Amino acid sequence: MSESTAAFLYLVSGVLFILALRGLSHPTTSRQGNVMGMVGMAIAVLTTLFLAEPSFGGLLLIVVGIAIGGTAGAVIARRIAMTAMPQLVAAFHSLVGLAAVMVAAAALYAPESMGIGTIGAIHGQALVEMSIGVAIGAITFTGSVIAFLKLDGRMSGKPIMLPSRHAINIALGILLVVLVVWFAASESHVLFWLIVLVSLALGVLLIVPIGGADMPVVVSMLNSYSGWAAAGIGFTLQNLALIITGALVGSSGAILSYIMCKGMNRSFVSVILGGFGGDSGPAGGEDMGDRTIKQGSAEDAAYLMANASKVIIVPGYGMAVAQAQHALREMADKLKEAGVEVKYAIHPVAGRMPGHMNVLLAEANVPYDDVFELEDINSEFSQSDVAFVIGANDVTNPAARDDKSSPIYGMPILNVDQAQTCLFVKRSLGSGYAGIDNTLFYKDNTMMLLADAKKMVEDIVKALDR
Image 1 (cartoon, one colour):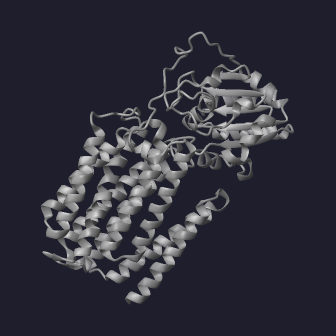
Image 2: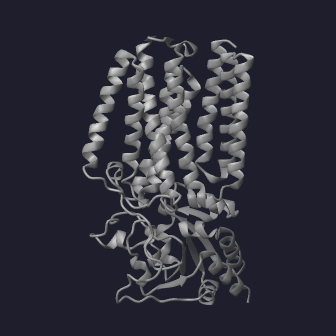
Image 3: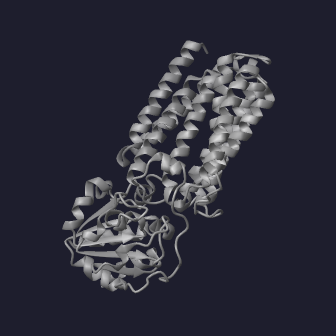
């Protein structure tokens, strides 16, 4: 295959990737976007294979590698629960970072095969690109591993604040820059691996102090890192498809991180310097003090919603944990049959990763037209009879709007307390991932439905049938 043909095919795959992102931006076109992305990747992979013209032995190794990776991916995709999707995404990001490190190492030890010079005489530009790519890749790898451990509950979700962490991070950052410059000038293999080690340590130190409340930002941020790592290695390999793909992933991840930060009223810098929040609070109402709650039953909730004209459902991570989305859709269908207007309200940082709630609702075949983002539906709560909150906590906490001393003050929230009645489904009165008590629990128009989300919704469905 000629280089001009390969460049054209890489351009085609790049256009398909752009169209894929465009399609994935809306639920109704997401399937089409996903298909375009897969076709684009298939074209890029096949073009690379034909351009490289590997030997029979090399081709056999590639096929075996694809078979192993593809089989593992298919098995994981079939078995993974939707509640585990955030940690799966973090794990996949770590693999992208590790791949960038491995490719950079291959380019260092076999530059002839990459067309970037010979051992001891690698092109200076390639050395700079290689060192930047391997640094970002190593940071992405360990940072994603820590994010996976936090999301999967294998490490505390609370911020782990190391003494003098900012000074340590600044020192490591300066050391990393020095090592990159030195490596580009000397092509020392020792310096290359020192860059890797320093970057691995920096990845850990950057993510460890970030708490559970900031995890949506971390997931999108690591997604951006993985893209820039791929783009950096793409320059080293002079692979147009890798450059385009990496730049798209890197820029889209950065934009998404900005959107997440805006949705939490936090700056990107404040997240990196130390996030807030962590594990959920105690299982009971030990922190109630002298405040009282109004506790209701499934029958109470069914009566209120059946006699309402408008109900807005607010899903959160608790719904995901209980796998209550299918029962929730059944409840909504029965309310619609009774003539009730039903809508869903989604907060930008609901769940543990961007779009988490949208994916769960789509899995339950909730109509796309019934699902609205915060800015599109927030004004409707004051005209609704019932706000049905299922497992969402921090994103409905009025303290973010009313209490200037609260750590989440200024964060845009769903104004569920403005509905005539707020039904709040939750296992307990424990705090959310921000570690802050929710004042919504104690408002006069709030009725707490303390139970497993799936069981409570199923009981409401039964009560609606009576």
